[in-house]
Image 1 (cartoon, rainbow, N blue to C red):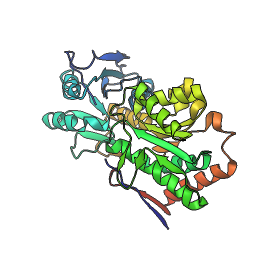
Image 2 (image 1 turned 90 degrees about the vertical axis):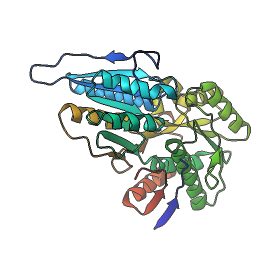
Image 3 (image 1 turned 45 degrees about the vertical axis):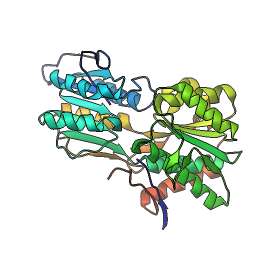
Length: 354
């Protein structure tokens, strides 16, 4: 048995008042004579609905739930700062939403406070755990898929240098970076290579961060710096900030990008040529499942835990890079995936959901 240790370091409001943005609705279809009306309300983190990442993935899940059940009405409010989280959540409590979803681990503290104060209200949260019985948690072993991405990057790099940066130094971010670094290390071990990871020192838990998830210019600057040091693949874990790297990669042709959360060729199609692959976090289906179950009156106490085994995390198709990835490398990545699922390769992290 091989053992790869992974150590990781490591929101949203309504208030039709001054916090965040005015709530928006999609749908509002009246209940059919045989169905019960159900309102699902989502508070975004600061990246907004168009982050092409985790907020967008969660909203797509809301839209899919409504498409499956016309009795479901969906709403959202977009947070501008962390100060918006609590009032936005409370605003949806006041609107008597049946299900209130907080998107992102940064909202954990605000959600815990609001959920404790409203024990009869059903909540959900993406990327954070909770022991409260009225909070349905959706978490993901992204270290598993990131490990595959790191191995792939090691095999695809021509320069022998790859880079990664995060939005903030928080567990849902650094778990990606740790998995990526360990995957590169596994490639080096298997092939007697020395591909270098810029931007993240796993042992020290120190690296490169932009300090937000909303600034494409910062993302471009970080990837430009990596490219100047010789990197030809960049792995941004920074929401909308990472789009700066994607657009720069497409424009320059000097490097490729591995995206996160949503398949980049779907969420950020204009930059598809730049995406080698994506470490997918299946937020969309987990949100759809929670809402459709809630609307059907099913219990939501059991947490959702996404893994490679249940397709909660995965690597996206190679799209325009399909013919450029050697068949041997593809086979090695597939074998690693099977080994992780079987438990013969262990990828662990203290930041991973328990």
